[in-house]
Image (cartoon, rainbow over all chains, first blue to last red; front, side, top):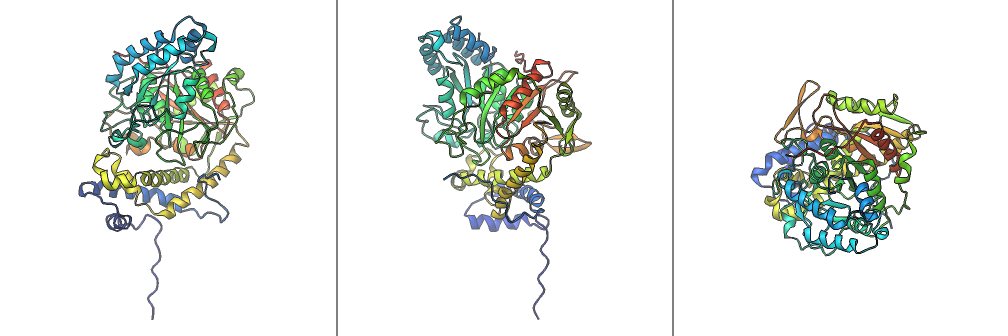
Length: 71
Length: 462
């Protein structure tokens, strides 16, 4: 019997910023000094909090990115 | 005649030959020398260059001296000035080679007769709303030096408000022209995204960055803005618009403009004096209609994420190798931005399209929207929290809550300064127009100035 997939919590509500910082910094190749960790964690939480506001809306498929490029 | 005069007054005097550009520049340099240190406004004064340039102007027959004849100005130090490293408020950039040529707007302004006198303090890499800077010291509010200028165009706000120069150039990604204009009691114009060239400047967030003027009169904003309009292939987002001069429009008044006030989000979370400032402007314009702006909190969230991710990416290599050289107040924000998931960034750029579509529909019903610029007047420099709606809230994340949604979709906005009836520091009101309708926003600002609802007096300096 396969285990049921746990429900995915909404963005930013179940977020271990300390662990995320360690994993993502390694992935990106970005050293973060020990003394910077508390402030970086605080900022990651702030970004996740605003992401929760943004990601709560499902966007239509026809909404194209508004970043600008002119050929 | 010096930086306490308006650009219009100086240009008229030098353009008629009544005063020489050299006299204006010398007096301006003396005033900067006397006051800039205490205000932390300038990071470099280009005295020799300015005097040389003034002599060149004086050698021309007065009628050929240009629409900005002899008008001194200064630029936020993220704009290139030949011979100086482009600091962008940082210690790291001091190691850069001096700029080989002036930024596009400096060239445009000087070709119209203006005279660059120096570069201005700013928050590090423009990631700032306070005006604090760990490397060069804070810029100080000219109306009360114990208070913030706002940022990140902190020196631009201080120098303009103090009358060190009649106008300055700032940049605005999320509010960095409008917030210091609000706190320092001056007019500021953030034009439509893509209107003015950013070529030759050290960007912060390419998809949100704008350059624009701060000044002490609406006529000066229009005059300098008109002189800077030019399509520029060196700026990848320059929109290639024809010259749409605002100056000839200023005396048209407000007839035919449908003016409304932003409700909901823009009336919550502000101190009473910020709402009173909007009330002053609304009354003077007979604007009783209130409009709700849909999705504004998401717009702010999306701008926040785009800023975090693009800003951090620009600095990624420096964050790897020189993190300790960043300002302790900006470093953790850049580091966190570098680790932000791509899905959020992509959604933010798609949400930008949706918000743009919604605002376009709103601009079918109204021409101008009024909103507070900042939720409170300039806090003390060392202040970290503020009482808002009976709750103690941190200052820094609240400084841009009203400006960020509009720069997010590149709308033109004029900050107009309102002075509280009972005295105290000024508060700005945003006059927001549809894309490319800078002239309409400036007409409204000019009307408010004419009827005495808004003004930008030179600060009294000790």
